[in-house]
Every structure is written in C-alpha cells, then in structure tokens.
Picture (cartoon, rainbow, N blue to C red):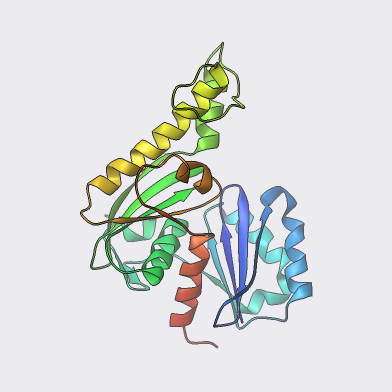
Length: 239
C-alpha cells in the first residue's frame, strides 16, 4: 500500500493506493491539518508515503507530525531532470514546482501524445508535454480566487464578486466572474493552439469552473499529482 500526499498552498490532497487502484482519496485544509491523523488511525502503515510539498518546510513538518507513526517510510519528492516517462527541459529542472512535476508524470501515465496539463488551484499552471514526453515549458497565471481578490482589493468600486458566467454579462458581479473565467480559458486555449494535435487535461479545485467555458476538447482528472506520485512510487525499490 502507498499513501500519496500533495501539499498545495491551500489544501493537502491525499490518496491511498493498493498497487492496482485508489482505495480512497480526500483533502484537508492546512488550517485543519490535524484531520490527517485519521489516516494513520484508519489505515495500516504503508510501504511508502510519497509527499509533494509546495507549501514550505513548516507545512511539511506539520504533515510529518500528524503522521508521526509513518515517519520511517516518508519520502519527500523533488523535481528532477527525468522520471516517470517525462524529461524535464526546465532551465533548472530542480526549480520546477514539484506539484507541476507530479501532474506532468501523472498525465504521461494516463495518455501518450502531446498534452497540455492544467492545474487550476491557487495559481493556474498550463504546462506542455510533447509527443516524446518532454516537458517543454509552461505558463503560470493567478488562479480564479486570486483574480477575484485582486479586483476586490485593488479597486475602490468593485466587490468580491459572487456572480455567474454569462457570454454577455449585464451586472458587475457577472462581469467580473465572466472576465476571470474568460481569461483562464483564453490562456489555456492559446497554449493548446500552439501544439499540433494536443489534448488537454484539467485538474485542481477550479478545474470544473474553467472546463465549463472552454471551447476545446478536454478531460477532467481528479487529483492528477497523486497519479504522478503513485507512478514515482512504483519506480522506487521498497525498503
């Protein structure tokens, strides 16, 4: 059994895998990290715990504290030049966010061919895999929540919008929400258009909202970095 943990800026996503399929998946907010203790009380000690953490060393320490009984089998995943069928062409491969790296590996495990991998969370990352499995680069834009907050905090007259998407918005809240979603979808569609024959995978907390306004074929995949962590775990010899 493998336990995979994807520690993002807002939430910690987790999954329990038995080597054939996911037995369970879930998420907890960093503010409620003590809920992770239920993992250790519910499941037997796994062969390995795979941790991808972009929330900083303090968050990583708190995760380990909640799962102290599993400390001997923890493995902190780092981005590298090559793993899981993906070659990392970042100028400094080790500086690629490990959540993006795991998402790319998860995407490659799910399908071959050129792929645009979108992670829609606190930030939206739009990364490109070519047909050979090379990560050739990617974009980072503020996520939906950040865009909404920036308008509310940076202007005198605009609210934190609670509107709905509309092709022709006719109130301020709808105009803000529609503009943010159009910006997200437009960025993704531009990247996909640059890669002949590319498919598009979307994951992350805001993925469904973006998918609803995309004008290109796409596929929603829940917790894509967990699939990457699982594949990496399968490439490692168990102690």
